[in-house]
Image (tube, rainbow, N blue to C red; front, side, top):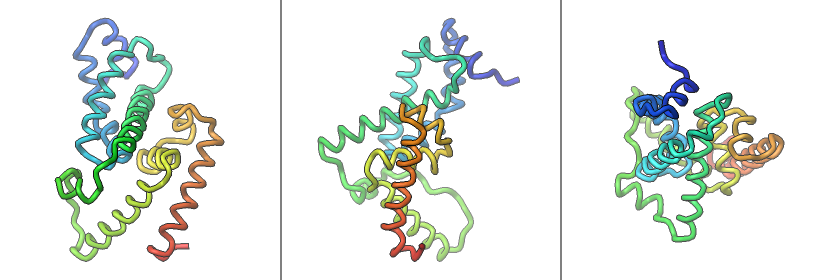
Length: 189
C-alpha cells in the first residue's frame, strides 16, 4: 500500500531520509514540468527542481499536514522560477534561438504523426509557446499553472497568495492578449 504524503512527511520530520526520497520520486516530474513551462529551459528547470526539493526539505517542519504537498512544492517552485526570471531579466538573458542551438530543449515525445502533421503541430506549438512566454510575467505564470499544469483557480490563488478573483482576471486578460496575438496568425476568432 502506498503511503500518503502526510505519512511520508511525518516520517521525514522523524528522521527517515528514505521517506523524503519517496516524496522526491513521487513529485519531481510534476515540479520539473512546472519549472520548464515557466522558464522554457531544460537545464534551468532541472536546477529549479533541485533547489525546490532542497528548500522543501529545510522547511518541512513548517508544512501544514492538512495541505496538499504537491501544491506546497508548486508554490516553492513557482516562487523560485519567478525569482530566477527576474534575475535573468536584470542580467540580460540568452535568446531562445541561442538556447535551442545549444540543445537546451527537452527531448521530443515519441508519437506517431505523419511528417506533415508533426511539422504543423510543432510550428503551432512554437508560435503558441512564444506568445505565452511573451506575456507579462503575472499573466504568464497563471496561464502556465492553469492550462499546462492543470491547477484550479483556487490552487493558483493559494500558491501565489492572490485572491481568486485576481487570478481569474489575470487568466481572462492573458487569454485576451493571446487571442489578439494569435488570432491573425492561427486564423482563430
